[in-house]
Amino acid sequence: MLPPELLALADSLTPEALTPELIAGLAAGLGLGAGPAPDRMAVVNTLLDAAPVRLRERLLVEFVGLLQRPTW
View 1 (tube, rainbow, N blue to C red):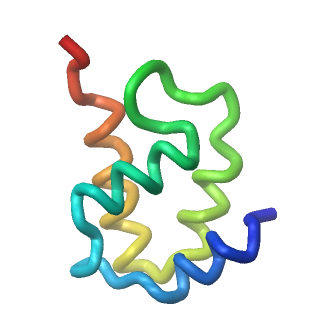
View 2: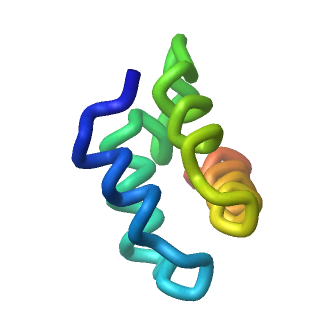
């Protein structure tokens, strides 16, 4: 189950509104970003499931991009 503020965010965002700063903040709040992926991805998966299709696709691309960036 997602916290109400994350559900509200998923309902209010559009793919065009996703800035690199917003993605980085959202990813950090979900445990993604610098370092290894979190042990449990349930919150990320629930957010993606709750988002409209176009937003879901963009979030997924951005999150995977963060995980694939080298840290060196």
